[in-house]
Image (cartoon, rainbow, N blue to C red; front, side, top):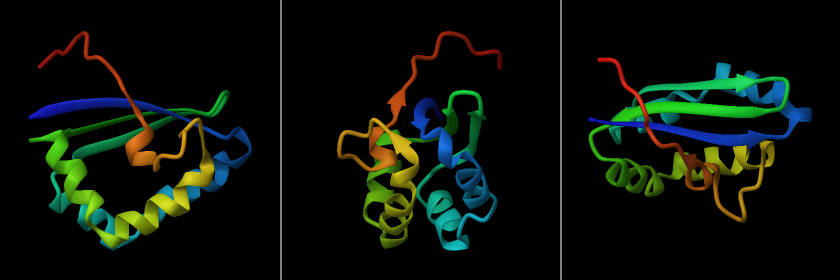
Length: 107
């Protein structure tokens, strides 16, 4: 199982709406994540500066990303989420995150 930590930068003027949207993630988006191998998925927000840290586990990151890329629900979700983020350089949020290096793990 791969453990994946990542970060993204949110626009600070949209934090409340971003949080609200994640309290109401579409059921078909949740099922898409599960069916493509995204598990133990969490997001953590620093409201002071808009830094977003995410963590999930997956058997195969490349396969999980490829699986989501094929799904219409993901295309729609990413399009709706893109305006919340800074520095995506033309990528969708699920393509534009910075993957973090794992330096410690206590099993």
